Amino acid sequence: MNALTPGFHGKPRRLTDRLPPGQYPTEMFPVLSAGPTPRLRTEAYTFTLTSETGERHTWDWDSLLALPQEEVTTDIHCVTRWSKFGTRWKGVALDTLLEAAGGAGPRARYVVAESHGGYTTNLPLAEITGGRAWIVHEYDGFPVSPEHGGPLRLLVPRLYFWKSAKWLKGINLTVEDEPGFWENAGYHNHGDPWREERTWSD
Ligand SMILES: Nc1nc2c(c(=O)[nH]1)N[C@H]1C(S)=C(S)[C@@H](COP(=O)(O)O)O[C@H]1N2
Ligand SMILES: [Mo]
Image (cartoon, rainbow, N blue to C red; front, side):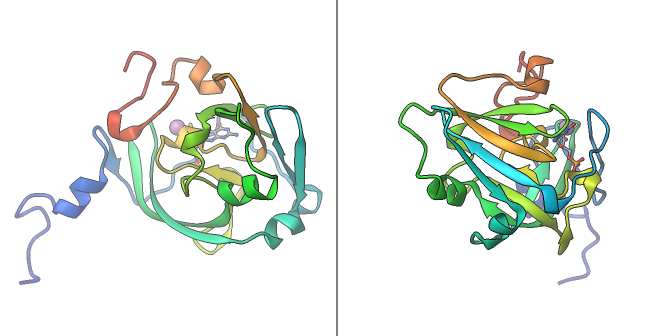
């Protein structure tokens, strides 16, 4: 039987299972930016990982591309309620970057992702390790467009998409949790879409 009208037997189990509460699926890829889109040239691009003791590891564009690359296909969920299934990205796992930098120190428990333009967002270190986060430079087989955070953005698909900082300048490991741009403006500090952690009151 492959002539079923979509919806006739209810929503396909697979789709429902993939959609966090309060979200709707979309084919579109909306752009959500709190400020102007910076135009950043890869020739001048650097990404810096700063340890909780202030030690800095900086990669230029070529050395980022020389690191082991991973292809990631994942669903993404925006707090404004759209979800997009099966987005395809390519980049470097945060695990790889941390390893190259000699690992996180014992006191590091959080990170702050920092963007060109001043946007910041905070995450527990545990949310960006163990194959949960990447810095990505390709979307759907092409360089990430400036509107979507190119040339380099963070991808943390298990949390609401505001945690996936665009135009990523660096990631700072921290001992204390330091709420970022939206977290200071009333968004939830953690932002798990499956728990509907949208705002501080959730
Ligand atoms: N630097 C920066 N990163 C950002 C944002 C931003 O305004 N500036 N918006 C966040 C929000 S709220 C969302 S939903 C996603 C949107 O990514 P998109 O524009 O590629 O859909 O980026 C996140 N990362
Ligand atoms: Mo968002």
